Image (cartoon, rainbow, N blue to C red; front, side):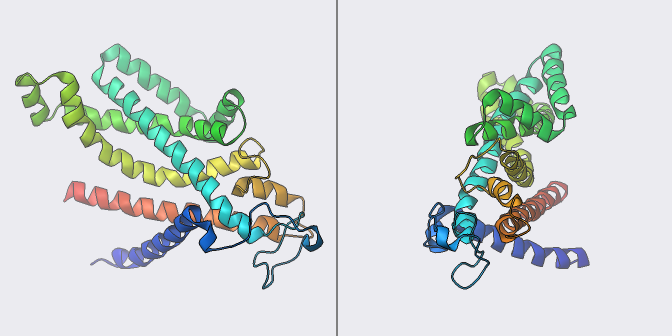
Length: 274
């Protein structure tokens, strides 16, 4: 066992444990807090962290810990839904490019290159202007930003599989082309794509939070982490905890997802070269 493996594995375990707790909070927030995300208590507004309110309260007296826990569902849902939608679009896009003629391949890939040339956040902003503000618009915007890169991976893998011996044998035996694609080409392109999607999930979560921070994503009083950062920035001098804790949870989640995703990517690469 190499020194690198010994140093990486504990980090992966910790990241996996943190990610499991975050997923549990998204699925069952009631296990972590009995307070509601929108319950107001003006008499306890701007209360610093203490035994009754672990993360303090905001300007409306809402429990910040409860809002952070309930916000896990929204932040993860936007990132996961956007990544999933990007994968579906990329499969169709990449397979169409790999299996079409030279003109179709060039047209589809040049379109992907044009979209990839734009900064991800800028592309997301342009899509939100068309799709509209809110959770749905943010999800579509993040999905559009991830699909071109995924499509290139699908195309590259599909080109390799298409030239393999078992695909050529299936074609020679007269198996219909759609059946060859479904049975042989598609399954062998999904592995690398799903690994890449795991790595990209962290970026999707942070992009969704960035759009909410700019006021284009989840709208108040939805307890989404990016929206909470926007609400808290006006109170940094007197109530720093309103923005600090959702920011820390966002950073922790992105780091945990990235570490686990990179670990999955390294394992997949190791199996490929073993």
